[in-house]
Amino acid sequence: MTDAREDYSDIRDAVAKLCARFPGAYWRALDRDMAYPSQFVEALTQSGWLAALIPEAYGGAGLPLSAGAAILEEIHRSGGNAGACHAQMYTMGTLLRHGSQAQKQAYLPGIADGSLRLQAFGVTEPSSGTDTGALRTTAKRDGDDFVVTGQKIWTSRAEHSDLMILLARTSAPEGGKATSGLSVLLVDMREAVGNGLTIRPIRTMMNHATTEVFFDGLRVPAANLIGQEGRGFRYILSGMNAERILIAAECVGDAKWFTERSVDYAKARAVFGRPIGQNQGVQFPVAKAYANMRAAELMVREALRLYEAGENPGAEANMAKMLAADASFEAANVCVQTHGGFGFAQDYDVERKFRETRLYQVAPISTNLILSYLAEHVLGLPRSY
Ligand SMILES: Cc1cc2nc3c(=O)[nH]c(=O)nc-3n(C[C@H](O)[C@H](O)[C@H](O)COP(=O)(O)OP(=O)(O)OC[C@H]3O[C@@H](n4cnc5c(N)ncnc54)[C@H](O)[C@@H]3O)c2cc1C
Image 1 (tube, helix red, strand yellow):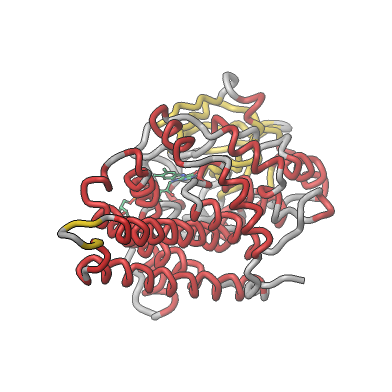
Image 2: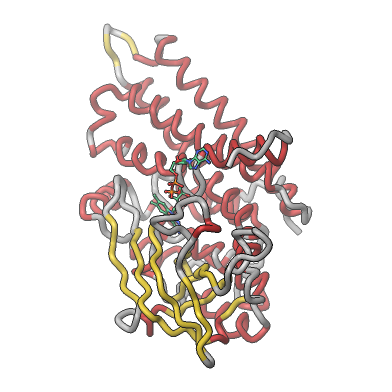
């Protein structure tokens, strides 16, 4: 039995070895072409790392969340980016926790062996943004199907996924609760594209295969409803702690990569006849970023500990994500500064990773929303919105 205190050095070593086959030049070329890291994702899939959290009964490794965190941290620490596939690791949690036995049998073994990709997650919409209760995509029951109409935005990896977890409105909100009446559908995109589903890529600051998705009368079998109709928001929420903790682990990995790069460069680069790293003006920001990373790492471990003890660590998962995203962006900024002009040169990977780690201030949840969660739910301050 493993737990959150375990360091998973075997897993880390094996993931680092795999990542060494995909060096900076690999990621730089993809970044330039805005291309999907298919070979890397294939290698991770074949090694079973993306099936780490799927129970053994369905063909996965049945490892705890802390093992998933170690895998994703190591990918980011190596200079790579797990954003192209991390959702394959955790999106299945909605199906695992709330799906029927028949749905789990039908899909989880394929997700575990990688023949089925479930890594698209359609929640955010252009007009509602963070206000999920205001989403407008509807799924209306018609015989044995739901008919889906509406639009999602920022649906990442939709072009590289077979299945999508979709949150849509199936009935009007009840009792003034905007998030009631939402349901989760498992959409099989292989049959849907061109038959009521259109996917359009969005080009972004960093190479992230994100899209907008249009539903125009798409028919989804009612058998693909996950759990009970109208309770979908609850199901989506229940997966958010895991997602936040795993993203926080990626940020810790980024922060470690940036700090290692800062230290190496500060030792090697000599100006005014001595290494720049001999100057406290260069050392201190690097040391401070390191201390902040370590503090964030402790919060990630605390969130993992509570999660694995079966608790609901909403506050710790949110704090871990916020502190780790802040630590990674601080370390990124310091790394650019330490490298001087070379911080902007593509060949050093620093500017690429800087752009990549900036995302986590906004997605999957923005810093302000974490702060307002803490203010309201932990500190008892009045709800602000
Ligand atoms: C690259 C990328 C990938 C993504 N992938 C996915 C995905 O796969 N699936 C998916 O469903 N979504 C995805 N998202 C969406 C992401 O979760 C949202 O962008 C994020 O939650 C913020 O929502 P928004 O963009 O609508 O911002 P908005 O809700 O419009 O907010 C804009 C700004 O205003 C602030 N703000 C809003 N309301 C308040 C308030 N009450 N108090 C204080 N500040 C406030 C926010 O903090 C934010 O900084 C992705 C986004 C990006 C950029």
